[in-house]
Amino acid sequence: MLKLIPAALPAVLKIAAVLLILKVTLSVVAGYRDYLPPNFDADFLLGRERYFWGAYSAAFYVHLLAGPTALVVGTILIRDRFGQASPRH
Image 1 (tube, rainbow, N blue to C red):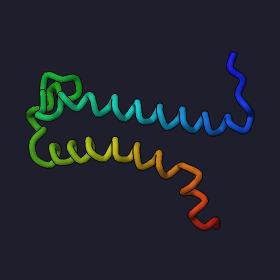
Image 2 (image 1 turned 60 degrees about the horizontal axis):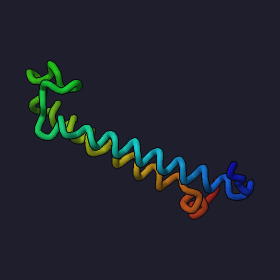
Image 3 (image 1 turned 45 degrees about the horizontal axis):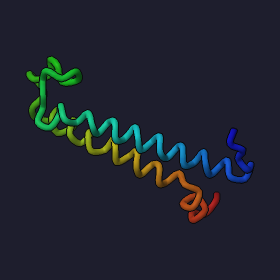
Image 4 (image 1 turned 120 degrees about the horizontal axis):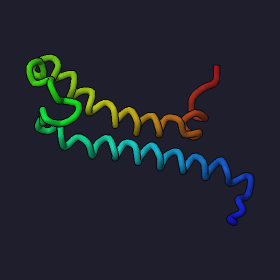
């Protein structure tokens, strides 16, 4: 069994968390093949063709772009280095 030095454990856990978040992000983005162009036979868009166009379409694509962006940027922001750079209140 691999023995970890207790001081190295937080770093290993951080790396594991980052890898997990990146895997989830890539899995989400891989599902976009049904949305660009919209495939109304796909799970999420099934039955939405009637009202998809217009504001719903715009909001849908903004959501598609914002989701992975939020996951990646959130991962960067939770790192200790960024927390130490900001003043404590």
